[in-house]
Amino acid sequence: MTHTSGFPAEFQFFKKKGECYSQNREKTIGLLDNVPLSYGVEEKQVYSDIGFMIAGAVVEAITNQSLDSYVEENIYKPLGIETVITYEPLKHNIDQQDIACTECMGNTRGGSIYFRGYSDLYAARGSA
Image (cartoon, rainbow, N blue to C red; front, side, top):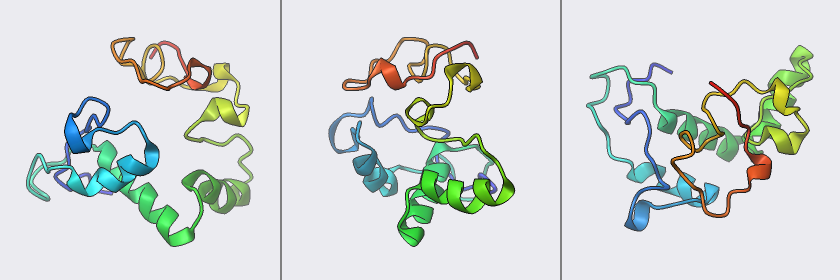
């Protein structure tokens, strides 16, 4: 991945109005082709969440497995890696102390965003 797709660094589906609003994984994946480019292709190198979301959706479509299952089965297990990285680590019994946080207060942008229907039970929180 060269990060030169032209996609923005992030696209906040939870803040958008109208048809690009989503708090549902399947709907969000379906909206990925509606994300406008911020730059021309190969014009600028920008890490993009959208690029990784598309890559994950492609793996899932080709393998007919969730990305978590595919990676665990085809990468982690053959390499003997026992602690896996998942979309929802707390649901997979990974201790909160073993999770490297990337944001304060989970994925809430420091408590400034509230995701309706999102349970604190599954939020990995800590200092980044």
